[in-house]
Structure formats: structure tokens, C-alpha cells
Image (cartoon, rainbow, N blue to C red; front, side, top):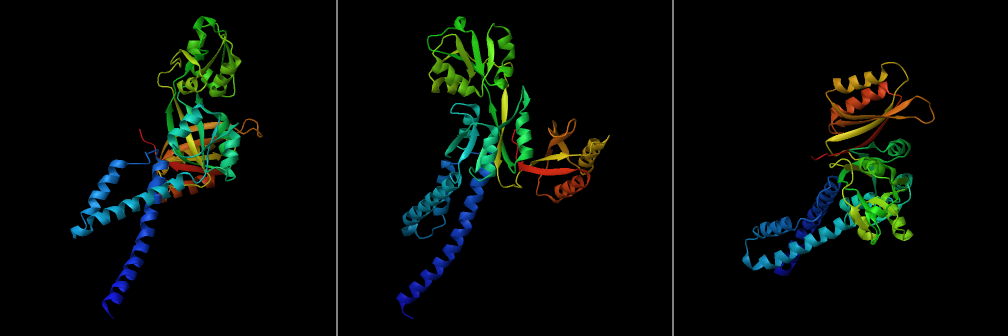
Length: 357
């Protein structure tokens, strides 16, 4: 074998090794982006990218190859970023409402580079995720002041969707009016019923007529298009900018810590995270729910949240939502769920995710 053949043989062997290592690396790249999405972490970390290039160049012992290797590793990282982008943008992100609504704002925060699609109702979002029309759904689940969104609990029971993450959005409600309006001009205020409830202390101190509207952004849009200085909306600062309105009074929510927790819906059940949640029903017998709670305690778990919701087709009977601290993939969790199934009429694993304070 001459020098040319020997060199080509080495190249072929190394190319084979590179192909195997490339697949291994791209799988790790995919794991990184999925973890970041699930934990609401920034997608791009430019400082780490620079550190990786510098560290890897230090592995090259032949100085004449360093610049070529730097170009090689930069191209590899660019390829990785394009692949990550393809994962992020693989499907649309569904949300309820219109541009400027808090669901739209939360969706942009969690999925800044993805295609967002608006739906008229919460159920439309669930349908889209369940049918594969959207990769993710962003839905308000609970407000720190007004409590859970009951309809969402019903839809979690009805649809084959799972929770893969949560996002807490600080909510600042503002009174918005036309550019030429003053606070003394306002007679009617439009907003979503949750927003009206969040601002009840402010509203009680006025003579405004509070009128429920499908969502905050649509209320702002209505006021903008109506052109009536006597009409105002309660909505976000972003919505004021979007629809050309003026903030008449800012931060009118009763609680200064007003926060809405959004859930991230997916079709597939994930087992990553330090929290998991379940839906279940029990026989309508005395002590049955207490028995389930006891089972959770006996298996060494902390039940962080429990909510009840009526079963609409069965008067005075309820289903329950629980959030439990623990890893869904752990064997002790599987043992708990098996024990609960034996004592529940129905049980659904909703999802798993991490909670960062």
C-alpha cells in the first residue's frame, strides 16, 4: 500500500468515527434544547459558545491546524444551532386570545423564536395540541389572586394532553383609554372577568360599569376601534402600545404580586422534572379521598397542591387535581401511582416538570 492509499484509508476510518460521534453529539444537542424548553431557560448562550471554542482549540497540539479547527468547530456549532432551531420551530405554539393578550405575552417569553398561532377558546388550544396541529399550547392555569381557571381543569380531564412545563408571568393590569381621554371621562370598563376580579378594589372606588369581555387584548382592541372617550379597557402595557391607547392609571390590580401561572401543553408525556401532577376520581364514599391522601403520605411524598372540580355529568361528585413533589420516572413514584390506581375509580398522569423559585 503506497502513501496515498494509506492516507485515504486513514481518512475513511476517521470519517466513520466522526459520523458516529456526530450522531452522538447531535443527540446531546437535542437533549439540551428540550431541557431548556422544559425549564424556561434562554436558548442561546453566546458566552458558553465562546468558551467551548477556546477550550476545544486547546486540544489541538499542532499549531498549524488551530485556525482550520476553529473554523471546523464554529461550523459544527452553527449546524447545531440550526438543528435546535428546527426543533423549536417544528410545530406551532398555540395560545388563546389575540396579540397583546397575556397568553400571547407568556407564549413569546417561553417560545421567543417559534411560530405562534392564536385560537379563540381554551378548548381550541387543547384540540390543536391533541390533534397534532400544534407542538405546544400555552394556557393560563392559576392566578395568585383569583385562583385556578376552572375551565382548564375540565379540559385537562377531557383531552389527551399533558403538562410539560410551567411559566409564571407577573401581571400588571392597567386602565387604558383613548389618547384624548381622561380618567374623568370614563363610564364603562371592558376586560376579561379574571382581570376585572383582579382589579376589584380599584373598581369599587369608581362609578365605572364593569363589562366582561372575552379577553383583555380584545377589550383594548374594542376600545381603540370604538373611538369613544367614555370607554376604557383593563389590559397590559404591551396592549396599550399595540392598539394605540393611553395608560390612564397603571398597576391597578389589587395584589402587587399578581402572578398568573401558565402551563405548557404537549401531546407526549415527559418524565423529566421534580414535580408531577395527576387527575383522579374516587368512589362517592365517606373517607375515600382521605384514604388517597394517606396513601400519598405513606409512600413518602408531599402533596403540594390539591384542587377539586365537579363532574358535570354526575351531580355532587368531583374529580381531583394534585401536584406532588417528586420525579415521575422514579420507582417509588411508580409504586405510588400503582397503589393509587387500586383505590381510585380513574387516574390520569398529567405530566412532569421542574419548578424553580
